[in-house]
Image (cartoon, rainbow, N blue to C red; front, top):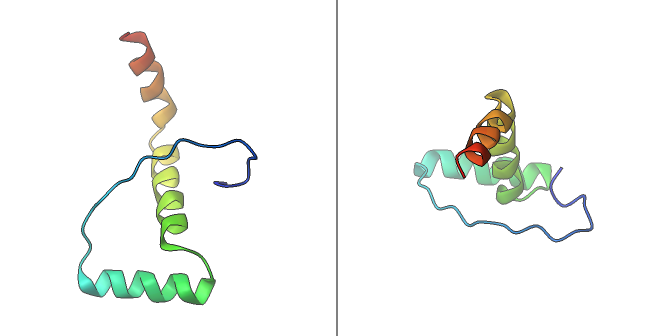
Length: 65
């Protein structure tokens, strides 16, 4: 999980839009679970990348150099 390593990670900032309704639901769920919105979004992106075998894309990206 993110933040579990003692090494510093270089992080990129990502901006995107959510509907007011979805943002409110996310904010309230994060509050009730005592987690940050950023933490949940990082988990969602990591899960998506894992589900779609993003490590294979990294191999292709390194070959192109």
